[in-house]
Length: 117
Image 1 (cartoon, rainbow, N blue to C red):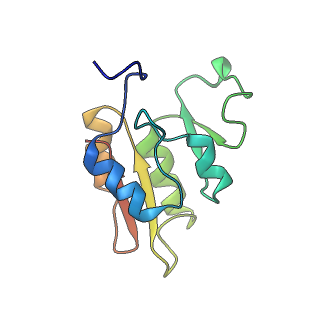
Image 2: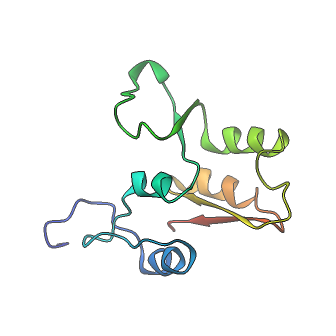
């Protein structure tokens, strides 16, 4: 049991990467307050399989995109919005194994992909 916390707490290694990379920590349940990422300056992209079911009140700070996460991120890379600067950039991804494998394949010298497993 996880002490009453919601399912989906981050793995310990993922927590330590976040602690070293951003200015805020997971809450007492080990979950990241995702809206806090936007408030700290991160660009959030929420990928939806069906935009018709979107509740724009949830994570209003996020850019909405429709489709597979890896396809949306590849389009961002191709458009020069990710991975093209000299500064290091990081993507945090959580999801099914196939998507995470594809996301890891998008990593470059300046674009790090960190996954929850």
